[in-house]
Image 1 (cartoon, rainbow, N blue to C red):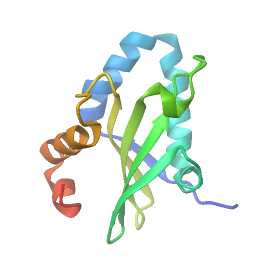
Image 2 (image 1 turned 90 degrees about the vertical axis):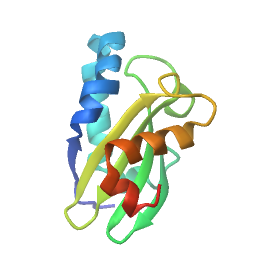
Image 3 (image 1 turned 180 degrees about the vertical axis):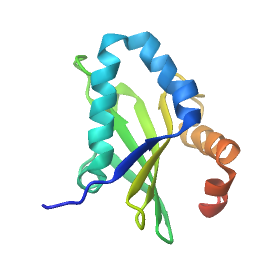
Image 4 (image 1 turned 30 degrees about the vertical axis):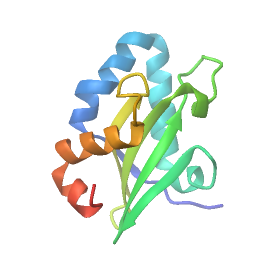
Length: 133
């Protein structure tokens, strides 16, 4: 399938918080993992055809997506690793914004979905409003 690539943007909040934790914890494995995440986001249409990405919501030309990822070199599947990215796809501009990148251990285990929605709403009020989070 011939897909056009999306441009990938790591939000500053993501870099300052969760990505920094991954980098500290996984050191040399993190660069390759981050390259893999960028590649998957560039080809997000293909990822949405697999079980690695879940379409959460659609509003106008925007889509909210949850993407599972694994740490490079560890023999754990992306789904069972508990590592996730919350993405905003702008289909008009063909941009993927990485809003959150976390391990299930980084956020409350009571209700993962409620917790990431709360973070997105607090950090990105405009996105929270678009998707009624």
